[in-house]
Amino acid sequence: MARSPTLRALPPRKKPADKRAVVVTPAVTSAPASTLASTLTRSTSMDESPRGRILRAAAHLFLTQGYAQTTVRDLAASVGILSGSIFHHFDNKEEILEAVMTEVSVRSTERMQQAAKSASSPLACVRALLLCELENIHGDSGEAMTLLVTEWRSLGAQARTRVLVVREAYEEVWLRALRAARTELAPLEPFILRRLISGMTSITATWYRPRGPMSLGTLTDHILSLVVRKAPARG
Amino acid sequence: MARSPTLRALPPRKKPADKRAVVVTPAVTSAPASTLASTLTRSTSMDESPRGRILRAAAHLFLTQGYAQTTVRDLAASVGILSGSIFHHFDNKEEILEAVMTEVSVRSTERMQQAAKSASSPLACVRALLLCELENIHGDSGEAMTLLVTEWRSLGAQARTRVLVVREAYEEVWLRALRAARTELAPLEPFILRRLISGMTSITATWYRPRGPMSLGTLTDHILSLVVRKAPARG
DNA sequence: AGCTACCAAGCAAGCGCTTGGTTTGCAACG
DNA sequence: CGTTGCAAACCAAGCGCTTGCTTGGTAGCT
Image (cartoon, rainbow over all chains, first blue to last red; front, side):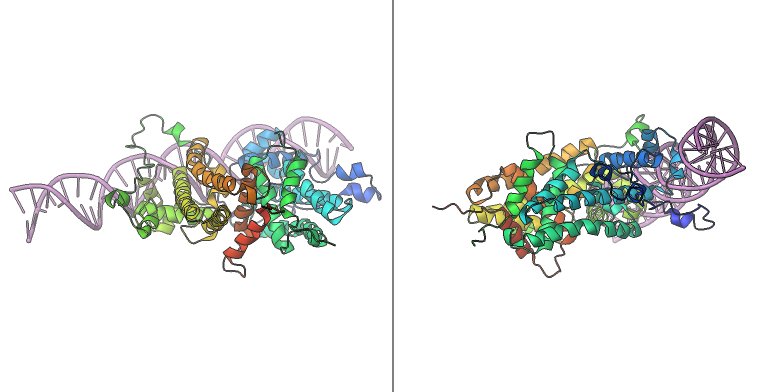
């Protein structure tokens, strides 16, 4: 388990190149003004390509069983190929986790920016972000934003900082919204307020069930009711 | 990793008995009315015995590196023995994790009950529990209540339910306090309010540093300020 | 012809755990 | 007092299995 392939494969590393990244979203470059639909379903790295199918299966398995408990053979079997064939698409197992995490980060950030853009007021924006984050956690949309929380330390240090860079844009959307609605929210530093909100939303993965009696909307309102200011700013 | 020793060792299982439990706290039985100090430091399973030292080292390693990433050899080395000697004290690796988790659960529940008992008002009780929970997460007191959150799924199903039983007493303290202070808190079901509080406190492990600029007390007050009722019940 | 996707087989290393024997502390006993 | 007995604690060695990953080759599409 605690293999460190970088140590063993030091001598003549002959893999052609780094299979990471290169997700420059070709659909966007080919269609200058893409429609909303094509924007949401545009072919990023989680499409119907073999690589995309592996990533989707990995997201599901890593989420349900955990990264360490999921073997490469598990993953290959759930896609319908043999274990060795995985390494035709990825250099090593950790790269799969990193790819899933960056993909999830990029997608969820896109959705958050969209949600923030189409809000009518600062407080409505916070509510929209709250709902969007809960949908990112519980929605069928690609599933598995929870991975970023639960499997964070399964990533090596280098990959961690790489994902963190992508992740910062997500948090920036939040902080901007919290600062804009500051007068209507609880009088805490936006950074701290964001951390507390993040705690409340991320832990819903352990107890909230979207098919249960409570809708995502009312869950959103419950959390929102805690973070709005107590004594409303009287004009 | 996914060994299932119960399958391989099915034939002549000759280990004498189950090494679990048997933590009947001898210090208590010998001293009928123990002092406060001896109650807090009484010899449970995390004492200076070899087993206790292993548990403390395991708590630390599991927390910092993760359970799956911590090998039995790591653990043995950090105690100063060889890997095989670990199994003189525990039947298998998972039993160590379970022992750490139950131990942490029992200790933290004790502290919570004590905190709840010595509170003067219902709201003060909630605050006391909040502070106590944060101390359980960040204090040097045995460290590692975070394990219960982060390594929950590293436990097998049977061990999980066993720990859950111990854990229920902890949550019961919370629910009782939230129900008692209901009129002064946000108008949410105690169960949901507890889950949201739990989210806020548990995630502090990822960003809050007790040696930083913010004290545990002010962090407690920040969280408390979110969960108290907006428009105070006017008598 | 060449590229992508995959198979079949297997290697080396690391893993949890076992085994049989040795040390150590301590209490019982003549 | 010295000896004996014994159990807890540990060592030394390694077994058997799983793991991530490699290698060399093939099928099929363009």
